Image (cartoon, rainbow, N blue to C red; front, side, top):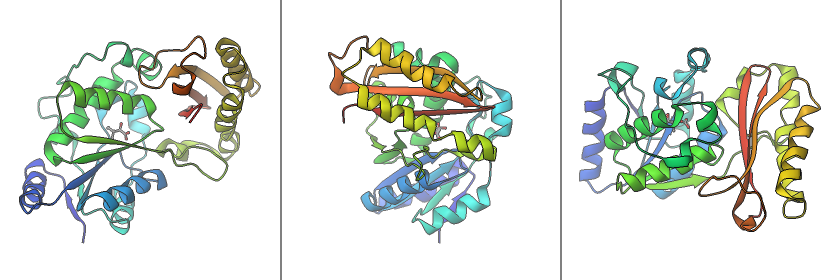
Length: 284
Ligand code: PAF
């Protein structure tokens, strides 16, 4: 039976005795509204560790838009059932006051240099300080050997790797491939906010990324970027916030194909009111 806790002290005690018995903990932090992308992380964690811990916490400090926080889907009873069926042993699902007893101003404030200034960092100011703060708090409670994150949040993964480096943390960060619907649309908790008509448009995101991958290394970077933006522009319901071709580690925009083996294309698009992100490594 999966155990569920909302309280930090109880969670620490339960995990502490497992670690004392010599068990390794694999951790999957989430904000709930789980889909097969999350469950793939849970199943992988189950294969590679003695015990899987999952957290569900809609972290207010990473939302720069209060309406987005309010609208974020929540369905904990259903999530708990799916977690248990996929091998999760402990679910930690705290309230906001438990994680931020001193209020939401209490942030880790690491220096990420340019990594948190571009793309998501540019359009969602403060987002990554919120992510780093909560992930670090969760790591301190769960004490995992390995923690699993999806590559769909490519920049988040880079930020977390950098956080672990700066804090000298021993947690091994495992980046896992994006899980897609049969039509290529990347799975995300936000997808359920799309109307039926909007959902029908969504596969264009991955289609454009794939076409960019085919043309990468041939057409100049700048031309390829504007070509991609024009493809989205053909649909009035879509609004591109950014489309970038970057180095996969530094996330700095590329202006030529010299480091083409490390190139990744990243996009944020609004379909109606729903903001969606996706990415594709161009030469892997
Ligand atoms: O990717 C997410 O769901 C969140 O950003 C995370 C890592 C759980 C932190 O709140």
